[in-house]
Image (cartoon, rainbow, N blue to C red; front, side, top):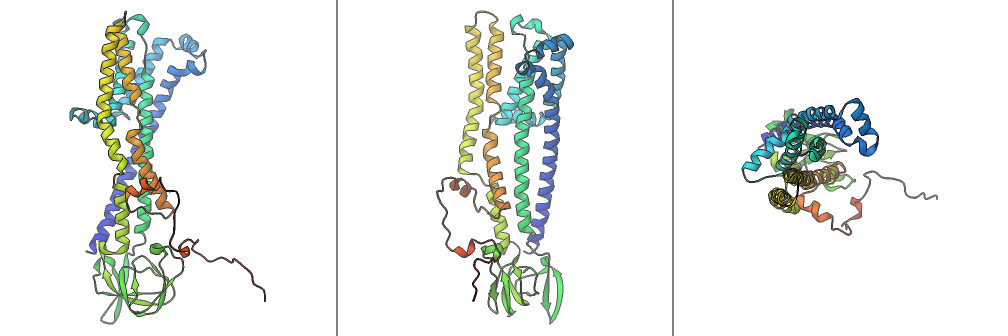
Length: 389
């Protein structure tokens, strides 16, 4: 049972390493994507900001060269940082459960594909429709990567909060056996073992005082700054701080049975749990992607039959536009990001959410009522009045 504390430590370390690795990967991909997208964006949209820019491009680079530069840079953006959307999105599409990755992959590819045709074989398109939309592909990938990176960063903050809770767990304790006091690893302790705690030390596990007299700071559990007097028969909680005297206590709970372990487990579950609104988001996403594809198809058909000239081109351009516009959708990012930021920021300030749904319910609160004023302190005494006699 006690080995679970060590297993949890190891599991948390591995999880943190995994998150750190994912964050480094995302950061690298985001930077690469942004650096490659910037020149594409400037070449494509520069004339909107500086009207003479397009003239300068025509005279110095030439329009065709500009398009080739955009083609190369955008292809790298889609193939390297954008590859994650294809790896996740395309299989989801074939499974019949398309997600946001599918939409990013579809929209970016549609814009890129059309632009490639306009650049390499413009004769396939009517002259007035030979345009490129490389910047749309590149910017979409960069924006969605930025969202994913923010989400990963929020997750790591949340893990730091759990790590701080876990740092309150002692690694060793002084056990009393046959009258001798020896320091042992916490994993070697079991229920009924007698532990000695000296002033200034953390109490290793939950237990019942067998001898001694002391004051214990239990602010970690109760929020009360005032130390609580403990004597024989009193209950102590693992992770709290022994302040004045020396105590001996019998262990009543180890491993996942301790109060601190249960708090950590609740916080972990709250972070992993889905909010009621997320189910709605997931249901919408499941229908949203096929709906967008259907609208794109309808757009293609309507334009194909409605346009008097170069119908195929107009149909393609507008179908692609539908896919691109629907693509950078916040639905897939907003909810998980807000949960991670909410629980992470809360944990940084010492507020722990026991359930994910509490976070959602909180936004409807008009006021907060506390049952005792003693809890709402700064954790240290201050002088409020001078009384001169």
